[in-house]
Structure formats: C-alpha cells, structure tokens
Length: 463
Image (cartoon, rainbow, N blue to C red; front, side, top):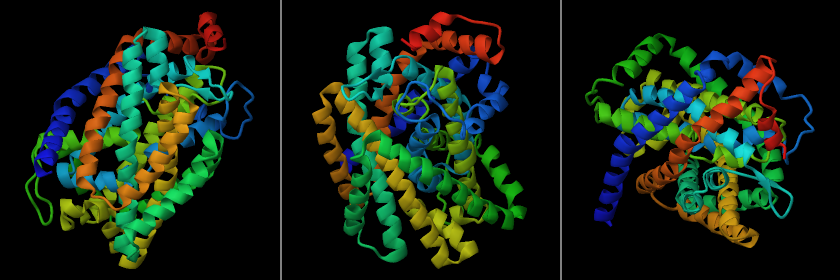
C-alpha cells in the first residue's frame, strides 16, 4: 500500500506541476485573449447582470432560476476546499500558493464562461422533461468526439466517489476534533441528510442551495474579516509573503516545513482549480438547467462564481491563517484544523472549533448534494435514469466510507482523477474556442452594445 500511495503521489505531482499547469494556463489565456479579457474589461456589467438581477422574475426556458443554478454550482465549489483546502495548500506550498490560486481564478473566469456557454447551447431535455447538459454533450454534438465524451462522463462519474469521500472526511475529522463525535456516526447522519435532499432532484437541491449558500458565505466572510481586522498590523507582511514566495522558496519555520516554487505552483493551482472548478466541466451541468434567453447571460454567473469562490472566500481563509500565524503553528499533517486554530486564537478555542465545525458541516452537505447530482447526470448520459439512481446510492455509501477514511491519500487520488477529467474537457474546449467567441460576439454586439448581431446564434440556441 505504501508503494501504491507513493506512486499516486508522484503521478499527482507530475500532472499538476507540469501537464495541468501548462494546459490550464494555455486554455485560460487563449479564452481570455479571444474574448478580449472581458472578465476584467466588463466586470461591472457582469455584476449588474448577475447579482443585480437576483430579484427579477424570469420566465425563459429552463428548469430552475439563474440564481438557483449559480448557487447550486457554487455549492460544489464553496465547501471544504475553501476551509480545509486553502490551509493545506499553504501548509504544503507556502504562502505563495495563494498567488497561484489567484492567477488560476483570473484566467479561469474566461474558461468557466466558455464551458457554460457551450453547455447552454448544446443542452437538451431528458425523458423527464428536465434540461440537462455538460461537456459530454458539447463534445459529442459540436465536435463529434463520441469516445472522448463518453470517457469524460465515465471518469467524472468515478472521480466524484473519492471527491465525496474527501468532503465527508473533512467534516468527520473536524467534528471529532471539536466535539469528539464518532466519524462513523457523523458519516451516517450526513449521508441521511444529503439523501433527503438529493432524492428530490435538481429542483430540491436548488431550493436548498439558494437559501443556505448565500447565508453561509456571508457569515463565514464576516467572521473572517473580523479576524483580519483585529490583526490588521500583520496584513502587509502576509500579503508580502504571498507575492514573494510565489517566485522564491521559503524556509521552514515553526510547524511549517518549508516549500519551493514548484510546490507553491503545484498546490496553488491544484487547490485553486479544485476550489472554483474552472475547466473541470462540472459547472455547465448545473447551469444547463437554468432559465435564460441567451447563453452569455447565464455564463456571467460562472464568472461571478469564480470571483466569489477564489478571489473572495479563499483569500479570506488564506489571510486568516497567515495573519494569525496558524500556518506556522500547525504542521502539514494537521492542516485540516488550521482554520479552527486561527479562529480559536481570536474567539476562543471552543467557539473557534465549534464555528468551523458547524459551517463546514453545512458547506459539506450542500457540496456533496450537488456533487451527487453531477455524478447522476454522468450515469444517466452513459447508461440510463435507473443507472443514475443506482449511482446515487453508491455516492451516499461513499459518504460513510470517507468519514472513517484517511485524508491525505484520498486527496491525492482526487487530484489524479480530477486531472484526467480536466484533460478530457479542456482539450475539446481549445478546439471550440472560435464557437465560444462567436456566441460572445453575438451578445456583445446585439445586447451589450445594442448594435445588432448574428441572430442565428440565438435562434440555434432557442431551437
């Protein structure tokens, strides 16, 4: 087993340090260039047409509202990675890992925008009249790469098993350390709660996420900003560490073992992608069910989700562990409790641990709920609706297994499988960049500037 774990770790390091870092950067830069860096240039317009439209009624084609699609997709990204993953990235890659998380987010905005555009254009209705979509659909329909579409769906369906285990392990570890709860009992309770949600399908999942996710995010950020405000004198040094050690090694200090540039790059990009999922291909699955009259309008929510998830939430988590010094007090093997230590240093050990444990529980419930939905859609695409229900049971069982399992090995396994999923999605996206540009140009000319455009784009979408 030790040899197998070493092999998995080596493969994971190679894929994320060399293959994925180059592939994602190339894809993100390509899309940013083709779309004239719209994610920066018209960001106020994106905000106006996302968060600024939350309370407006929508009667366009779709199964759920645009905001529900956004919170459903955000539920899969705003979870354990924001609370546990960021400290792990810092523990193994140093403060510089945060810089690479930011870079992944900035160019990832264009990548996620593109994949949601394609997901919306090539979505279709299933036998139950529910709108479904995702990379497997646009890879098959737009490129005719049936085998690649099948491979993507199969790999993602499998990857979500250890991914679910990672999420449940993070909450069981936290609850055991804070309250002394048995991991097995935690696994059973979490599986039951999530089962109640996922058996209601995307409509029930979206109704849960559009209530819970905004509340959890705002509350978590509020307490994080209070901690940063209390340690405001340490903030300049913390920001300096992030930029300095993105390009220079950092030596060991306290419980921190030290890290090189490659480690900062590897862990920053891996956790950054795993956090916002730009390029993974999961977001189009949730957004495909949204009510909208143009692909770009829904894809803007993808840009906003990357901003909220990585630029805002992950940054606050990272700064909290840096300004409090928790990153030097807690070693890599206990990185999952680093946030609790940071919160405990300000609000007291009992409150800090309880706060993180409770919020992690809510984050994990919404995250796993949407991950199971993603997995079901892959089984439905590959096999049938009955197979999707069978996979639902597999994922619920994996919640319990993950709760009593180890963290480090499972996380490395997720990285390897996630890398394969990304490759299957991103390479087709490179070939479809011209089509994404065409859809975006239609929106920019006909709606953003009001100069008219190519009606064929929207007519085809509304077929």
